[in-house]
Each structure stands twice: as structure tokens, then as C-alpha cells.
Length: 194
Image (cartoon, helix red, strand yellow):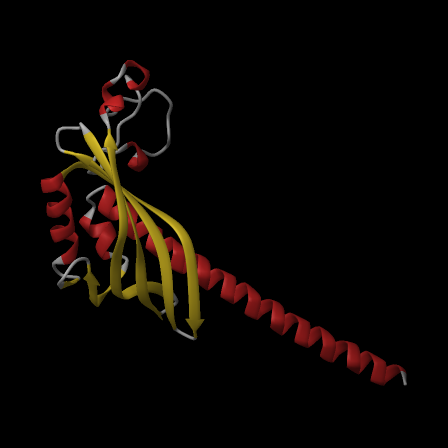
């Protein structure tokens, strides 16, 4: 009787460990996928083509607008488009859902993009979603295909950025001189300011 009880506890413990491992793997996969999506947005906001490209598999494509762009072209096309039309841009990832099936996943990430006009007078906030097909290869998740939607926009006065309450605030730059690349983080270091 005692050996059956010990055997039963051992089987129960084995099953519990298996379930915990599955849960931890699922949570790690979801976080790795979200990290990839957030990193891609950071790459575009900082105009860091290398960082953007690192989020896609070499044969990956991104459909921003009417034509899908291959990875070989997409980061620089995105940078040129943002630079030509806006003084700065910022992509904010919001709601995120993810369906993982082994080494593939489909995710939907809501995005709100801030787009400051070249003259700094107006700013558009555009809302849409990224629908991504991702693959895990050698333990790393990257985007294979991305489709982007645009669903609404609002435009407003951005001249507040030129007002006294903003003077001296750190201003983001579209390159590796941006404060987010500085290591270690130090208070008061020279950087771009309003």
C-alpha cells in the first residue's frame, strides 16, 4: 500500500512538473514574440535599419500600404518614408494577442503611431494593427510576414512642443545618438533637447 501511494505521488509530481514546464515555455514564447515586435518598432523609430532587420527572417516581408516589401528593402524604405514626411515618429504597441503552435505563431498587436509634421505644427495619432506570422528557429522568434492596418487617425496642434514648459526636455533622435543607446544611463549627459 505504501509503495502504491509513493508511486502515485511520483506520477502526480511528474505530471505537475510537465505542466509547469509547458506553462513556462508558453510564457517565454509569448514574451519573446512581444519583445521582437517592440524591438522592431524601436528600430523604426530610431531609424536603426540593422535593429529593424534583426526582427525579421531573411525571406521576411512587411506589407505597409499597397505593396509588400522584402526584408532586404523594408528597413531603409520605412526610414526614408518617415524622414520625408515627418519630423519624428513613435510607434506604441498596445493590446497584444498571440496564438502559438509549436515553432510558428500568429500575433495581433494594436499600434498607435505618433507622427509629428515636418514643421512641428501638427501631430497625427494613427491607430492600426500588426498581424504577424512568426517562426522560431534555433530558439529565436522573428517575423516572417507582417500585414499592417490603419483604422483611424486624429490630428492636432503640436505647437506645445515649442512652449516654455517643454524647453529643456530630452528630445528623441532618429539615430544611435538617441539617449536610449547611451550606456550606462547617466543623469545630465549631453543629448538633444527641445
